[in-house]
Image (tube, rainbow, N blue to C red; front, side):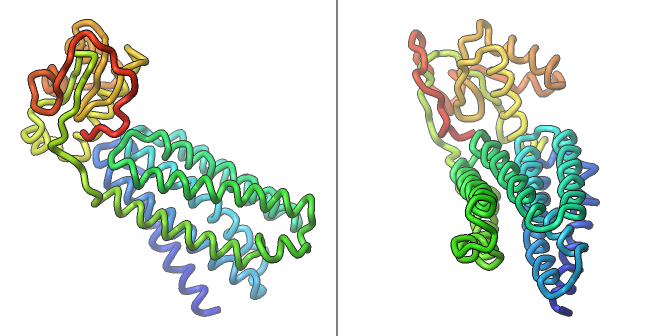
Length: 321
């Protein structure tokens, strides 16, 4: 019991400290830093949920079960916030949704007897993990490999959680199948494996290799990229530069749904692309004039070679910024 309460105390202290520092900065520069902070909180929360379940099994009372269920659902939800921060998207609405979800799970667990609350928690966890998998799989932040690992891990856990609820309701919560596949022990083992896989992926996002000198073909012949990369990186920092590239690609898709990614920018058929994208970035994304002047024709850089007259047949999903 003493060890369990110690783990809980450390988890609460770390999560509280990180949230206190990170929450006021949602949507500000420093995307990688925010991503790492929220990913760390998600991992601590997942570990804390296991500690709560252990305490509950040892006679800890309904409060520990409530905290365990809330922490279990919060872990993938906070990872969604981390991924949103990594792409430079404001996460306030997502954070409000997470708080509402946590409150709903807490109320159900506190008022609905087992196994009813377990079924609700499993479905809520499946939905949250599924949403996290979708966000990770659609992220355009490099490197792509670790984000695919995060997406796959959450998708697997979403299927497992939904299957847990279905088997419990249809076959029985005391059935042999449920005890051997979906009870506390196997669920904890799978959860621990998921935390380790996601943790390794997070480390790879931070320190993973990136191909800086890659040269790509731009068949459409209209590429807009962020120029003066070294000078701009020194002024804005690498996190903000990734945000600028993400904004540029998003703005290009606003004007041209068929726009494709190229290193450090986008390929588009928009006429007078540099001027059009610069104006759209100022009005829709709040870019300052000193940021829009960074936009250059990709044909003038060594990063992109254009071939006018042919349209790209697929997006450059593997392009490196």
